[in-house]
Image 1 (cartoon, helix red, strand yellow):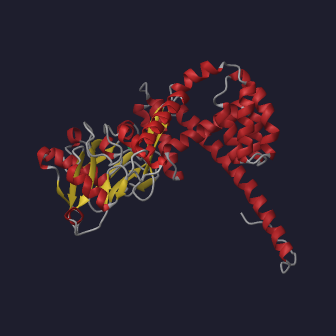
Image 2: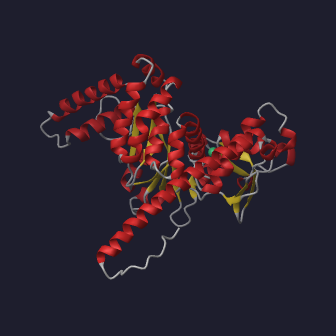
Length: 412
Ligand SMILES: [Zn+2]
């Protein structure tokens, strides 16, 4: 949207600056209103999908008991493909809309007018989602005005304090519920590094940190130790979690009972090339790390690749079987679930026959197999989502409402 043209003398910097300020304010209000519109549209469309499941699962399947659930999933995937968003984001936006509309309607109106910023409205939605019904109205009363004047960080602090003032439930009860959400997850970073996060009860996290401190302090006492305290804590944590006992530092060698796939270019393995290896589910890792893992880490499944074509040369001969080889090749080719936008690792996916093996005599060949996570596998079979595959153009998805897209390129 263009700002209105103003006939002022733009040779003066103060005029240009005033204009720039006005444009920024104008654009932000427009973007805020557009965001609210997007939430409203997603929310309304998913209500329609639940009410008229036949649009997404077809007239025959619409009478089945799980039709509404599958229609909703197909519609979420359809919106995600059209908006270039993750399905999770579409669901989150639908949920955000229903929380704002249903629990804090005055905040929702202010967002639609562009009077409350997007970050503040989302903070409100996130917090009010954790409040019992009797606290919704007092919470909205407490935050409505500050939400229109405070910057996001200040507002979050204010809103968290307001949450505690209006909460009707005891902290012990809230904690008991929150503990259910404990989890561990990995996040890939650049330059061959990853974050490993753990969401834990505060006392468990504190005990773990104290333990790492003790280990790091003990190791730091060695006369030839050059690692910093932070590095020692990180090494101790990594080793403990990778199942390496008694050694701090040195990485994953010796871990037992787990298999991680690592692809190593053959020239790198021989030490005459410096092409990076590929760690499954992560991406490139440094050549010396790849060499070390391929040489003497029993828990790593190594795959050698041809120096020119990148084709896989060695599929671990000890487990070689034709179907296993084929499955592995398809999983490596796809890298992730082949549904649009899905990030699930191919190793954790089903291998789906694009043309059904039993009903339509589709061959068990890599041009007729694709990695699909359980969720998208079921979506393909239970809704009007369709997939085709051919050697030249690869995989193509068509949504129940007719949008078409080629599968995402493999991640690595
Ligand atoms: Zn998937």
